[in-house]
Figure: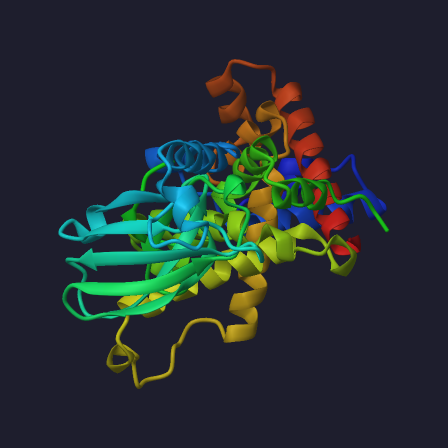
Amino acid sequence: MSVDFDKVIGDDVGGAERERLRKAHDALLVAGPPPELPAGLAEPRTIQRQPRRLLLLAAAVAIAAAFFGGWLAGGAGGADPDFSLAMHGTGAARAASATLDVYPIDEAGNWPMHMTLSGLPEGRYELVLTRAGRPAVSCGFFLVHGKTEATLNAPYKLRTYDGWAVVRPGSPQILLSSGEI
Amino acid sequence: MRRDPDGELMVKVARGDRIAFETLYRRYVRSVYSLALRRLGDPQSAEDATQEAFAAVWRSARTFRPERGAAAPWLYSIARNAVVDRFRARTPLAAVPDSPDEGPGPENRAEHEWLRWRVHRALEELPETEREVLALAYWGERSQSEIASELGIPLGTVKTRTRSGLSRLAALLEEDEFR
C-alpha cells in the first residue's frame, strides 16, 4: 500500500501542521484498513438486567413454603431447598443437564446449593452466577466424573444476577445454563 | 489529568450500565476484532474471541481504576488476553515452530499492534464523510480525482475532507499519548 502524502495534502500546508498530518498519514499506513465486521458482531450480545427477579422468585417460594407450614416447622436451615432450577446444556455441551437446588440463605448471607449434573466430560468446572447472560461471579469449582453431585455456595445478593451457568474455570463459554431466571 | 470519555464509560459499565457497555462496544468492536483476526487468522475464531473479550470487559469492569490510567490500554490488554487464550486453546505446544519467525520482531509487532488498535479506535470517532474519503484514498488506493468522481463531490471537498480527517485523527492519537 503506497499513498503519496504530498499528493494527498498538497503543498499549501507547512511546518508543524504538516508534520502532524504526516504522523496521522503514517499511522494509517501502518494500521491498514479496519476489517469488515461479521454480522454476529454488529450488535453487542443482549444485556438484560433483571435485578429483582431472582430475589422475588426466592421470596415467592419462601412465602409459599411458609404458607404450607413445612418451611416454618423445619426452620430456615431445614432440608428442603428454597427453590430448584433445571440447567440445560448449550451448543457446546448438548448432552449435559443439571438440577440446582438452592437452600435458604443463612445469617451471613450465603445461599447453600446442591447441584446434580450429568453429560459433561470428566474435568474441572465452575458454577457461576450470570449477569446479562454472561459469567459474572464464581459459586465454586467442582470435578466431574460421570453423574456428579456437588455442594456449592453463592455468597452474593442474588437480585443483582440473572441466572446460573457452568463453565470451564476462567472460560466465558457457557456449557450449562439455567437461562434467565 | 485529561478527560477520558472511555474511562467514564468504564466506570458506568462497572455499575452495570447497559447503555454505557453498548457505547463502549461500538467504539471498540472493530479494534478488538481486527486484533483477533490478525492473531488468529480465522474469522470464526476471531469473532468468538471478540465476544469473549467483551464478556471479560463486562465481567472485569469493576477492576478498572481510572486513577491508574486510561481505559484504552486496559481494554487492549483485556482483548489481547482473550485472543491469546483462544490461540493457546487451539494450538498444541507441539505445533510451535522450531525455526525463528522472519517477520518483524516482537517489540515492533507489539508496537504496530498497539498503533493499529488506536488508529482503528480513532477512526470510529471521525465523521462518516471524512472516514469515507480516507478509506478510499488509503485502502482503496484511489486518487483524489477518482474519489471526487466516485462520490460525486467537488475535488476541493475531497481535499478538505481528507485534510480535516487526517487532522482529527492526529488530534485523537495525540490525546491518547497524553492520557
